[in-house]
Image 1 (cartoon, rainbow, N blue to C red):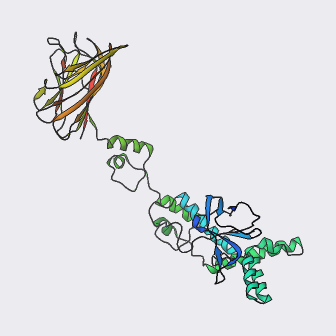
Image 2 (image 1 turned 180 degrees about the vertical axis):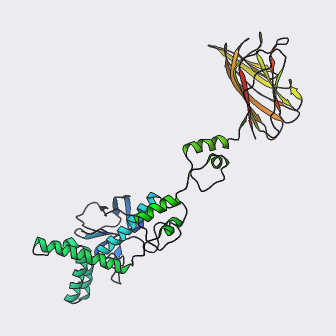
Image 3 (image 1 turned 60 degrees about the vertical axis):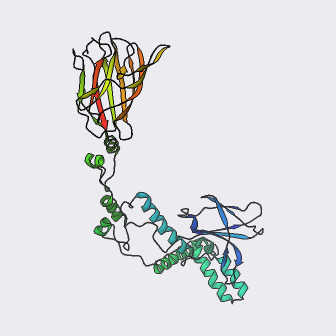
Length: 406
């Protein structure tokens, strides 16, 4: 059987032909199609144009005479390696598989009598011989080439089954020897050469391949390498990827805070200059008795209690109240004496001291939303909490956390 050649007699109708090469093919450019007997002025086969329906089927573009023998060949490129293992990270299972397939395909071309990678077959040689009127000895030589490229067909001429087997073995051995002579097999790589991955002439054995994979495969990243993003030699695990994503967000988060109880104002200081986004997360904070809770922004030693332009809504079942205009902070809560949970997100507007805020949350008596903005006298540095109603005091209960990033 031929490994790298297919011959199909065209019987008319669709010019669709299957591709069933041993081991398939590496690149579509390796496939050529011609019709036996169609030669150019130099006596070379004329390649036919075709397209791929898939990797297992092609369609010849131009008409073919019924009864013509269509020949499809696969020829690997022998001018360069299919994979360059000198580059870091190329010693993968897929690359090693590609290299092995490439080597076997080149040997198959030799077994098919195509040592030089030509697409000539016995049919083409016979046609050329008849056209040029060569002597019978030339036809015999062409028959010998046919016997080398298709050992199974040659052995069919033997008079006994035993003789056929011996002839096939001899033909295959001869073809293998010819392939070895045509391309000298390089010496095996040493362990040092395999693990260095820089030599491009030595031959890799299974042992050397295993040693190369072990030596050249990168190690897993440390947490420091993953979070700093400065290493380019190790590989990431799911844990390290999660840590890198968390670190790459750039958020700095305070510890859990509690309101200063019994007073009029509780303040969190510690937001550094230059931040562009702040989040205040409230968890089951207890609103002042008889009042909701207001959240204010501060700059330096000044807490801005006025100058806000906000709107506040609340929903309780099917009832929706608002919007209600607010000028004194962001109002949290849906009713008096509530357990409040929610998030205030603050965004700095175009490197100014103007901050746009959106507060959403739920409370014992429904959900609430507040949105708006305020202009501070300088960079934001603090978050303050006050009761909504004058004369009321803050109460103990729940926590809040402040996070920021540049």
